[in-house]
Image (cartoon, rainbow, N blue to C red; front, top):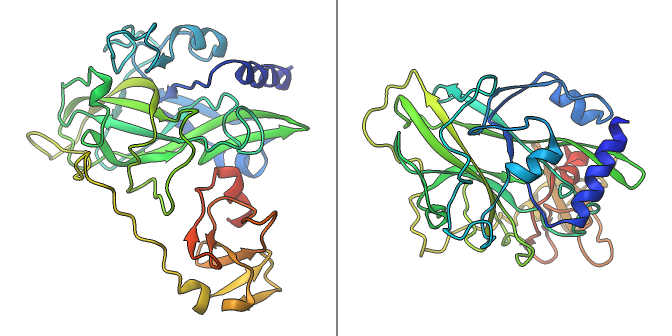
Length: 334
């Protein structure tokens, strides 16, 4: 019955416009690595800190009607607000605000909703985009307008592929997205007090993919449209910072984001494992064209249908970085 419900959700997701929202700000997952290795396991998780005014906690159907926020839906959001009006600074009993310290890593959880895999779900063969965080720069300050969700207010480095750290069980042609996670470390510059953040899924049907060499930890792609938001607060304690804080990017919105190409000398000087197999090593031009980093090693594969078989490759033949990989594509190389 559990998987039937998950399958129903995937079917529903395929028949409606894409949407997602932040389910938990501070998630404790006791068996994440085991669940990623064996997605058939139940994910053992507890939420210790919630988004604003959380309602219908855990009820996917009800939350999809009453909690998510379609940022660019003019009928729903005629005033261009960054947050759903009901997402005020309110935390009912049982769904508390997150309390944390600078330097602490929080594991955020959002709904996959049928969009986590490149090869299945809805829509097929589309980059799932990124999730990222915005902050107004100091405590007790609100981001009110969607126009404020810009590169200046982006929390630099607070960004990840939509499905970069997901647990996805696949049975036949159905997938059960048990959890999509995004780990983020709180900057040391935040002073004690309440800080308001906006979680965003930056994705739109009109946007194809991130540019070559895109690094979610350092680069900001202005072309990725902010589509869905959830607002939350963190009560910062134990900080030594004082005064205004600036967690945003130092790059002005009008400036292009520089991103240097990967050093192609890996193709000439490094050893890689053909097909990811330790028994088959090669160096330089003797190797297949598509290289994938795997810790301090490299795995390399031949083209499939004229292109690299998985996302995230450095194409040594064409001397360019291919599109970013989703989590399920990276798994064989870790």
